[in-house]
Image 1 (cartoon, rainbow, N blue to C red):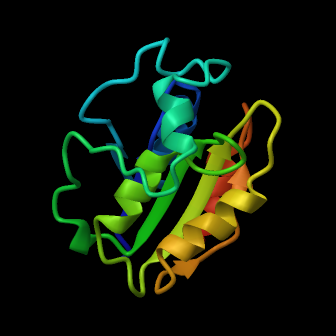
Image 2: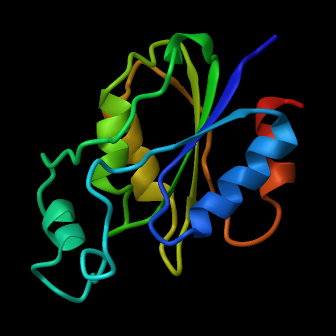
Amino acid sequence: MKKILVAYFSASGVTARTAKEMAKAVKADLYEICPAEAYTDADLNWMDKNSRSTLEMNDSSCRPAIAQPVKDMEQYDTILIGFPIWWYVEPRIVDTFLESYDFSGKTLIPFATSGGSGIGKAEKSLKEHCPNAVWKKGQLLNGTGAAEWAKRMIGA
């Protein structure tokens, strides 16, 4: 039997709600990608050119530290990975997550939340970070349908 993990980063709680709904629907373990240093409202002010999120997203080599690693990542065959779209791609902390483990041969399924951007550029970026994973087509999930989509994606 496949072991499934829903891993997500959520700055405002929107992606967290979606991830929790999906994990419950597919009976997956849940892991929040928490930054070692929590983001403040000021850090997330994308209109401020000197905010933490803006500085991170303008530096493609930036890898914010994660508070706690996944326990026993080797046990998971399928990982649904969720995040808000920032600057048309995944936040840099998601890159930290992807580069922290060997996902070779594992199935990775991205999902995102966004107020206006699509997931296409993020999918391309994610694949560049983990070229040896088996990537399935991702989905932008804003509001409804997350549980049904997750079940379809994992074949439940």
